[in-house]
Amino acid sequence: MDFLTQTLSGFTAMSHWEYIAVGLSMAYLLLAIKESLWCWPAAFFSTLIYTIMYWNGALLMESLLNFYYMYMAVFGWVVWRKGKAANLNITSWSINRHAVLISLTTVAAIVIGYVMQNYTHADFAYLDSFTTCFAVVTTYLVAKKVLENWLYWIVIDAASMYLYYEKGYYPTLALFIFYTIMAAWGFKTWYEEYEQSQAKPLAQL
Image (cartoon, rainbow, N blue to C red; front, side, top):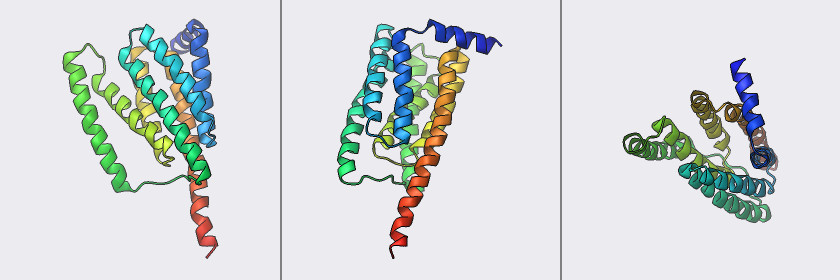
């Protein structure tokens, strides 16, 4: 009951700009799953709002992260728009390629986590660093239409849920439960399309 009460109270306390940003974030996810080019404008304007909101709230790292998301929204728009003409399809990376990516990102997250743990007042420094570093990498995977990006998001969102629960950010926790479900649906949708695209060349033989 406390969780529900605090979650509802948190949503009630949100500003209209936060509601707009949340709505645009949900629109981004739905459109990305549908592979709609318009997911990127939704992402751009939602992260623009968050960038300004976090900056005004003195959450500088969160603001910088969302500024990066703004850049990636532009990058994603360009890549998907060019890819539409060139038939940019969903691709799947090899296990070895993912292993290298995960290893390098993990090293970066540990280094950043160590700095945050020992030289700042950050809570959950390592967990926060892991979710941030992998979110940066995974956003790039979305832009390149790599199938496994959704699996990364499921892990990132699940870890973030624990972080927000421990910090008492219940409205954000509720949103990330939704994001996790959407990421699972996104993987299922993209996987089915990927399988169909792989079957077409075989059917033509």
